[in-house]
Structure formats: structure tokens, C-alpha cells
Amino acid sequence: MIAFFETLLVLVAVGVLAFAGLTVKKLYQGQR
Image 1 (cartoon, rainbow, N blue to C red):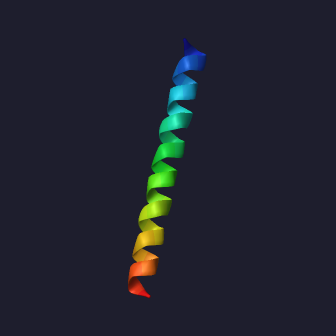
Image 2: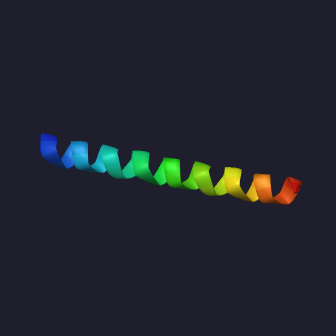
């Protein structure tokens, strides 16, 4: 049960980081 929770937490963290990275990338390209 704990392993499942940790895996879910990692997936959420990776998803948030990927979303933030894409957002920053779009904003950076938009400014140039």
C-alpha cells in the first residue's frame, strides 16, 4: 500500500515538473 502511494506521488511530481517545463518553454519561446 505504501509503495503504491509513493509511486503515485512520484508520478504526480513528474507530471507537475513536465507541465511546468513545457509552460516555461512556451513562455520563453513566446518572448523571443
